[in-house]
Amino acid sequence: MRCVVYTAPGGNEVVSCEERPDPVCGDEEVLIHADFAGLNGADVAQRRGHYPAPPGWPADIPGLEVAGVIEQVGSKVRGWQVGDRAYGLVGGGGLADRVAVHERCVVPVPSRLDAQQIAAIPEVFITAHDAVVTQAGLRPGDTLLVHGASGGVGSAAVQIGVAMGATVIGVSRHAEGRAAIAGWGATAIDAEGWVEAVAELTGGRGADVILELVGSPNFDGDIASIARRGRLAIVGIGAGQKVELQLRDLMTKRATMFGTTLRARPLEEKVDAIQRFHHELGPLFDAGRLEPVIDRAFPWFEAADALSRMESAGKVGKVLLDFSA
Image (cartoon, rainbow, N blue to C red; front, top):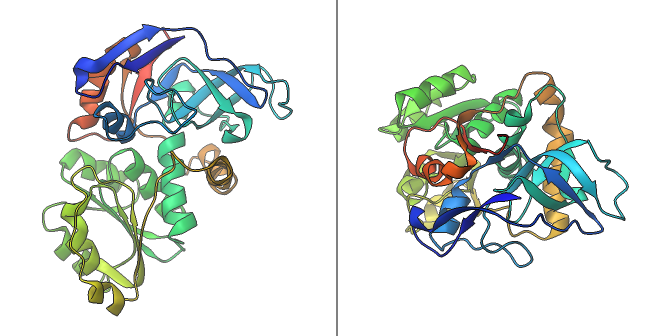
């Protein structure tokens, strides 16, 4: 297989593009041949030494998701056949053109989408759905505020909120990002002065659900902007993780705040998140109500450049690696 390897914690100098033996497919696993692989913020954090793979997953091959064609099935697998298209989540090893994954951690691919599009779905859409819908309980008529709304998880959350009938406000620092957010059916606002903008747009009521994908610089504003009995979901902390909280502010609004990740969850919890997403939102891809958003696809041997793009400002959607050539 061709894969991306981190030789040590650090910057892009530790990124190596290598060929290694194909993964061994376990009894309850399927081996997927992937033409494209999706990058995530977690891959940058792992390269820096801050987010190691859970036990049992490749320690030096990053990547949290897989999408492609099943090439081999384990002896106990009954629900999949060679040639089926599938996508889903892994704990590591996803930045490769061959990935072994538990059969219950993948689901069928929306029929109208191509190989590049399906690679842009799993991690961001499942993360957004799990945080905003399953945990925060977004309902039709709610107001959803999304920070970093033009990125991978942000673009998924905006589309999910719109599809569910919520009023969605998306925050982006860049004009290109705000244009994309508006195109997805949300109200786009600048990161400068966003607290005042949210107050104006909601008549001072605030947002029922806030998806925080940036980190601590937004925290005071999030507390000020959350509606009574609102829910604050913390998924991204790239801009900082330390805050000071006035507990009375949270108490007065009877608000709920929680943090969440997907990578290190036990198998059954991860399967539940994947299957809930598939059953609740999967049909919306074929109906054209949800669309994977791709910023750029880099040749796999330019993985360092792709990671630099992940770290840069102004992305709209997912950054991918292309293993198809």
